[in-house]
Image (tube, rainbow, N blue to C red; front, top):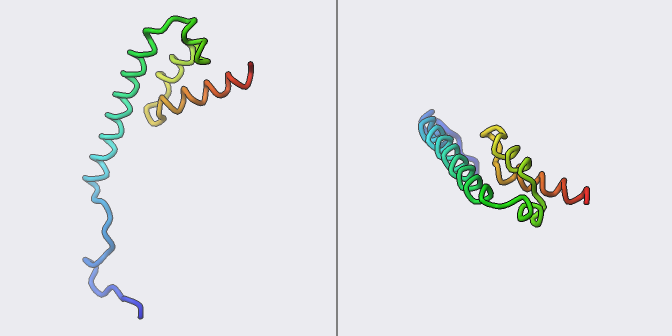
Length: 87
């Protein structure tokens, strides 16, 4: 037996525009906090320490300067993988 929607208010539940907007702001805030924490923790490391984990200061700068729509941790991991292949 199939159900038929007879009333337009019986549409399937979807997040409201306000909820989607709130979630987008939350994602933006999370990414901003992640970038801040990354800059704080990795910024304290010397070039030698960064090299030990397969990174350079340029990698960190590139990840932090990536568009906010991309996750800085993912960008940094991608750069580290790319560098690892070149060794």
